[in-house]
Length: 189
Image (cartoon, rainbow, N blue to C red; front, side):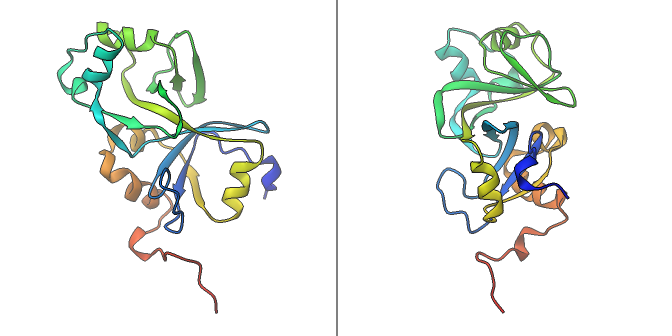
């Protein structure tokens, strides 16, 4: 088994343990888009905000008229740079500022992907977040070692095909865990 110093959690879900009381991350499922010795960047994928895509598009002078998409919620991606949008999408495509995460998944922070969506030529599947979750060097590994997070390989089905309110139980199921059986704190014999 690899030591935590060399662990790479890119393209994994972080599932907040019930004991994680941080208001930004309690009950969160985070998709880790980048993880390196310099730190990590992830997006919370199960926190809808009080804004839909049509409203977000209006704010950046775009018009979104694709019916089911327009009413989709924008997600709270994390507490860092909440004024910036991040688009997690399939396929990766050719956008100005895209990081390929793996398995045809891309993370784009440039406006051109949203312009393409407004024109009907954007990625086939996507979620849009405002903000992201960030960790400094070694910070994510430390939080995982303290049992703040469970990790499991990410699936595009959970990101794109699972209703938002089902993503946390769905992530637990990927681990073979029934969330009803998780304790709020560590036990001692």
